[in-house]
Image (cartoon, rainbow, N blue to C red; front, side):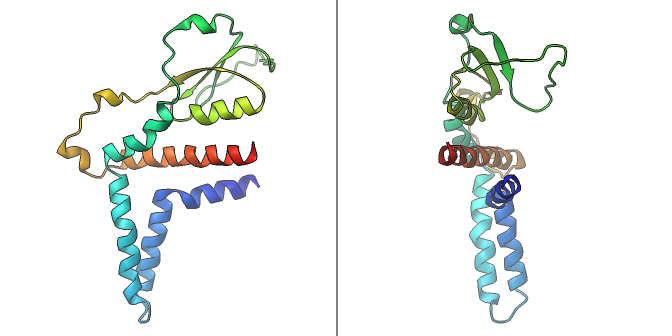
Length: 177
């Protein structure tokens, strides 16, 4: 089931789905009967893929996820926290200090702002109530829009894919909750 879920997620990602349509269109362009559909398939994804690569569009995709939980600036509610749980790559646990997190233990959850809604949902489904401390928050107030914002960029498409991955993960968690 794990691999099936990973494969389904990959197939639903904008870049993979778009490239699949483009390549299918190119293959169809080599056939006589289906040649007229080839251009339609290529065009059907070229425009959306281009639009998804614009920075303002990417920001609109991630904004609802990143704005769910505010920055942790007031440490009032976390004085009782026994643990700080950090989700994400590059963080190694210390084997000399094994964590024994219990359901009722107060703890702070640190993960990227885009991932926080899904992480909170999954922890709450397990009966835990972490204090969210989102990281890597985009400064939307500082997001100046200029003509250059509407040049397609891989970084913008990457943001869209990250947001799409989180939306699919939220849907999956809610369906299996």
